[in-house]
Image (cartoon, rainbow, N blue to C red):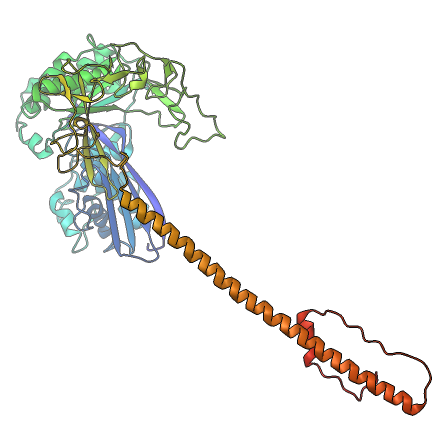
Length: 604
């Protein structure tokens, strides 16, 4: 269990109910909660980091975090009392919290999978579902997240004796922290994967407010009219088959997605819900198949085969009009291959035909060469479909894609091309976009970008939609665009930004010059000292050389005198002359010669 290893867990978000399928139907969507887990050989006993939605609120201790508490429950039920140590977990969650997209279901599924992997339990999917249902007692979201696809599920009615000693889901996780938790009964939930036509895509329109599941359930009645129940039964039976037929029948599916069990009662919690369900129809929006509340809301789920952006923007406009809420949207893109994109007009996967850069992440040049970059009056759309001709002023453009509009002075505001040149005191338009990013420690950072079509040195006043002069440094401001420098500091005053050239004072130049001069003098002094040292060493070597030569010559002369004396005494007349060859030896050899003594007893 504690053997060092790494693994990755990915659990999808999900949408539940799908109109008449209250607590029955669920669909997994391509937005994933991910866990990167590493069991270390040494280090801290437990380290957990978190990025994405809820980074500021989610607890990061194993006893409080829903994912790790669920894993502890699975381990405890199998006789393992604690997590392996040292353990490092990073969680990334792009799933909006409290919006009806199964964020808690994805966390529970991730926790069960984490416990199964940490304990090497090798549980089957059916058994994993039992553990999920012990915590999340509604099967629609967790079954879809665990099994994947379009799933229908139900809870089996268990004999009361089977549930003896098993606490409610709310206290079950707390028990697992202090003592061994009970095993879940076998076969709590059952499911079946239903057919799904490949042409159908899911669009999730997410307004910027939350609805707690408990609150959404509290508004539901405890008893229902028989006619309303029959109404839902009839449509549920048709819907589960209709969504698997190709090509899909828009009229059949739209009417089969009507509901009288939960949506009418939740309209008081979600401003604009009745208008969205009644005004966004296949007759008005080509490609729309059906529209409903996603889970407990407030997210809206639309099923469509094309024109996804028009359908989403219509729902967003209702949210804005009725409740003043901003919204975002995305459609479920099953073309997850880096080389493909989903064509919104046909709902099919096609090869990417262009690029906005010379680099595409995870693209393998050995598999396929990079698609061409667009130029000469063309642009590459956000989906990288194919190079498209620039559009004229007044035409539709993708959000903040100025390069899609004809002309170098054009600008894309509110998805429409404008000419950037409104004069001082002239009428102007603005584009307000909210970006959410995450810093290095996972905290959410929200930034509002406001762009306008005013001339340089002016900006658009939101109160009266007129271009007014930009403010000099030191003036009060609220946004960067109000300042001539383009930077409004945290103290709400205009300042020079980090990319603005600052004049260096004369005294700083003098200090820099003196510093350079002193540095040069220091280097010259060091070089002079090194030269002096080297010269001294060379001088010592030369003196040693001549001293050795003198010794050698003196020794040779003594030998010569001895030889002459011997010859005279012996009366030899050979006429031989002794010669001394004086050479220039290597210094080392010279020194060696001066210290080597000859043995006069040895024959010459």
